[in-house]
Length: 215
Ligand code: AMP
Image (cartoon, rainbow, N blue to C red):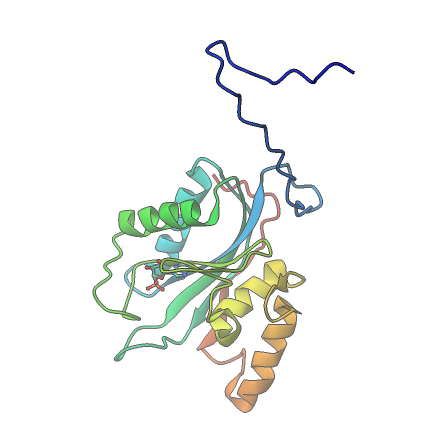
């Protein structure tokens, strides 16, 4: 039997063997194109024209290459939880489809926060706009810059409330519960302190946009 000829380059150097890497299992989401990932964002503003800042943030996100806003929640007015006496927030949530990987998406989000005049001098202080990545597919990330799922998502009614409106069935990958379950649990935990008729949790603007065509 003839000896198998060794693969060599013109200069007689042995060619390195090709290594086949098995592709990792891909997450399939119905109706979603290959290479597109679904991310769930939380937005908040408690300075100036809060509604306008939320609008602007949605507009700039929708204009970002590789980001498509596919669902947007109602805006909710919520009590400020943080340092000092702060005005109430407006909060909203978005579902986006993106080709950007989590850290790249965070870069873009921070650019938008900077464009809209966010100053980062006071932790949990007043802010023109705050954008958080609440969930990104079923990814679990924890490094110096980014934690996904957002570590406070399940603790924050102001994040769960708008998110459950547009992504109630989505499963939190570490708590293994749906967003709606987490929201209901939080309401029970708050007991009489939760009342959606109170100004602190008042819904002030209506409309879910499934096909996002505002701009
Ligand atoms: P904040 O003051 O809430 O806007 O926090 C901003 C900081 O949180 C930034 O330095 C981010 O790098 C970091 N961070 C960690 N995880 C997240 C996340 N899931 N979404 C947004 N910012 C995050």
